[in-house]
Image (tube, rainbow, N blue to C red; front, side, top):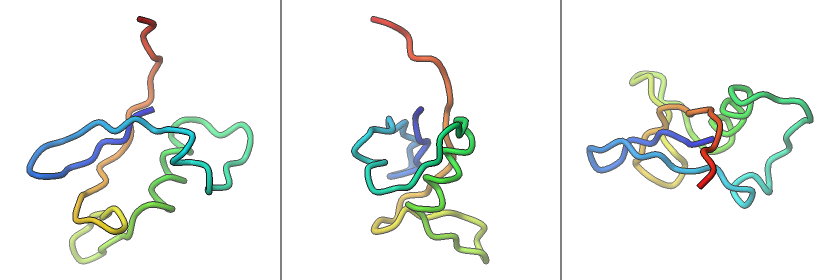
Length: 73
């Protein structure tokens, strides 16, 4: 899973790591989109008058997630 982040006028894909999730309670059996919602709820602040999610401690915007199968190298 990758997060889609808008920063410095560019979109970035940021891989989700176990370290990022270490302090979040995640129930068993969640799918990728449910996990995306959990990440959004824990790492962003919603600005209702602009309808955006800003990543806590930054000016970067949380856009969403990409769920997919990793390609073996």
